[in-house]
Structure formats: structure tokens, C-alpha cells
Amino acid sequence: GQNIDQPTEMTATEGAIVQINCTYQTSGFNGLFWYQQHAGEAPTFLSYNVLDGLEEKGRFSSFLSRSKGYSYLLLKELQMKDSASYLCAGMDSNYQLIWGAGTKLIIKP
Amino acid sequence: IAGITQAPTSQILAAGRRMTLRCTQDMRHNAMYWYRQDLGLGLRLIHYSNTAGTTGKGEVPDGYSVSRANTDDFPLTLASAVPSQTSVYFCASSVGLADNTGELFFGEGSRLTVL
Image 1 (tube, chains in turn cyan, green):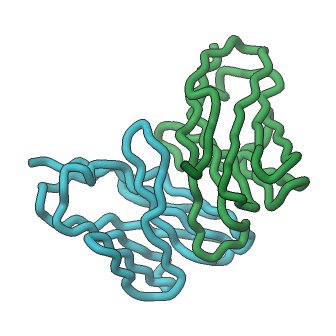
Image 2 (cartoon, rainbow over the protein chains, first blue to last red; image 1 turned 30 degrees about the vertical axis):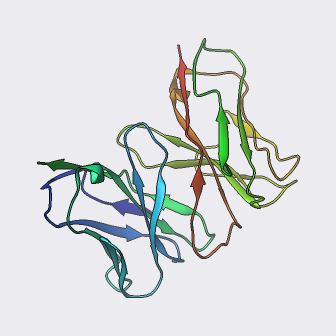
């Protein structure tokens, strides 16, 4: 079956670094995506990885290892506005996204 | 401002009633989707459309129907609402179903409560 696993909740301190892990099992693979969702709002696209390695985009980076079925989202210089849920999603062979339940990130001053 | 508009934002509905959630996009995207989001679960795909005139079933299609008469509109209908359909519904679009950037643009959501 298809499955996305990520931690339910994480807590970090303002200014610090946090890594949110995601493991995936999909029928075929066409990429791994991260979305950010603030409470009561719509998800917004953060990153896309289809090849192994690290993709950096400002304070956010995303890593993929296809052989391990593993990805992480790295957030640096945390700000209070980064408090949100982070959704991991894998794209299967039919180009459909399989979503994890999301990781709620709590930032403390 | 370009984007996706959903209506209504929130609705309380009696069980057995018919309800249509509206979704309109002005980005000329080919693909559109309806998801439901429930606490503790990932987004689950209800129905999708690759292009105007075509629709497909997602992971949880039962009790829901969609139509895609044109590029911009993708309404979701609950023929006879049941309490298990209480959820937040998100409409989304992308350039194409097989768009390899995978970027979905979401509406602001419709919170539906079925009593």
C-alpha cells in the first residue's frame, strides 16, 4: 500500500534549526513535496524533490533519498511565523499526491 | 487577484440534504481537485479533473459527485449529506495533472458540518 509517515508534532526555539522527517511508500515515484499550512488556512507549496540530494530555498531546504524512501525539510533561523503544519506528499506513478497527516511545528520564544 | 475561490466558507447542513460546494479558478489551469482534510489524517482526494469535460475518482469518492463543464469551474456535490462528511474541503488546481513541479494552488477551504 501507499503510505507517508511524519511526526505528529515538534517543538523548537525561535532562531534555532529544526528538521522534519518524512518516510514514504508509493506505487511508483514522481517526486516528493512539502507544503506549509497555517492553522485555518490553505496549504501552500514549499518544495519539490525528484532527484537525490538537497534543494535549498532561502531559510528552507529539502532533502531526498530515493533508495531509503526518505525526505526531510530543514528550517533555519526559525521565526514565530514558521509555526504551522508541514505536509509531506509523495507523487505516485499516476501523478496523484499521497499526503502525510502533517507535522505541527510549535515555535517557542 | 488570480487564484481559486471557494464558496461557501462555512456551512452547517442537516443530514439528508443536498449541498454543492463551488470552486472557481482564474489561472487557466487544466487540472482541478477536491480534497477533504480531517484531523489526524492527510489530505484525501475525492475527485479530480485532468481537463474540462473529464473527471476521475480519487481515494474517497463515495457520496460525492463532480462536473467540469468548463476550465474555470469544478463544483462538488453531496447528494444526501451524512455526518461522516463533516470535514474541511479544499479545492485545488495545477497547470496539468502530470505537471512535474507538483505545485497545487489551494482555495481557502469550505468547512462543512453535517448534523
